[in-house]
Length: 469
Image (cartoon, rainbow, N blue to C red; front, side, top):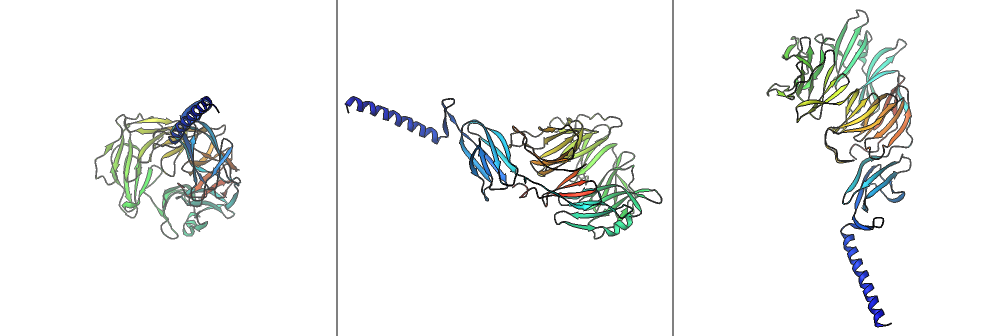
């Protein structure tokens, strides 16, 4: 081998060595060479968290790993910036898939992914059910039709333990009445509006569920002319209610004294939440008043809300923030501008998520999510943002949260589970068909309950773990 050849080979090897050294340095710093664009790029990653565990993670149609029983997540590193298709599969479960964009030095996250059972069955748990009313996360009140006369009776159904408790003494009393309205004041008390079958008189009755075999206690101080009826148990079970004359009155349940005027302002509507009265006055002001009246009134709005004649107003409070419903329009309080700003029209129902960071809003044919707090996953969105979920050809028949990022809804009798992550596509799962369904999810046993044709159906268990897995 000539000297010239040896020199040439030395230079070639030296060049390769330098390139390899540079590549190693770049690699150690997180760079990868993009042959498509012919340049070095900083890499990113994808982080997924899945329930149940032992799920296969498929990236661009290639199996790259599996979540473990202890670690139900997988972190995929050193990915060149681009869009990737990620699919998650587990035998016996419906798959989840989405296109996620990876950017330089950033990690695309998909947390709280739920794989639902591929086959979900519904079985009848109770028959001759006219309606049900949730008490808390695991108990409901059943309004039943009994006997050949189809008289109405009430019972408490503990869904977590699958135990029904008949309210025997109350039902004997109810035999002489027609139940016109039932309101759950809290998880341990009911307010019934009854019509006497003989005299045809209508009255409110209070039912204390804390006692064994409770009775109905007549509340003559309440009538259809009263409104916004609230119960404050911490104050010895005092009723607060709006009365003709547009003031708030209070009445101790076990006192013979007449109701006394609690607040004298001309009040359009109010709500008692977390120890505070939130009040909309007839001149369009919104006030926050401490229930004990130990602190000065706080005026929440500077701009008066223009009330419309014959419109119906309702105040709601979520995460300490007031919302105002005017007929079917929903307004949120803009704390910076101190005024109510319209966020939705045609609103039918509003439900806070289990973690209280977002609202599930049902319109006639649409579902949207309103953020009460800033979120970082699936994308960075500030509080007050709206996330459009879907629009349907038929009216939405009802919906309820399954988990903080999933919910169930009914459309033309089709029971569907859906995520709230709208990136690239929306993962939805049809699990059954029932006529005119009323749905409710039990957080205790993780089953979906559906009332259809006077029968109460229960689904198979939908979740394998608790909230925030």
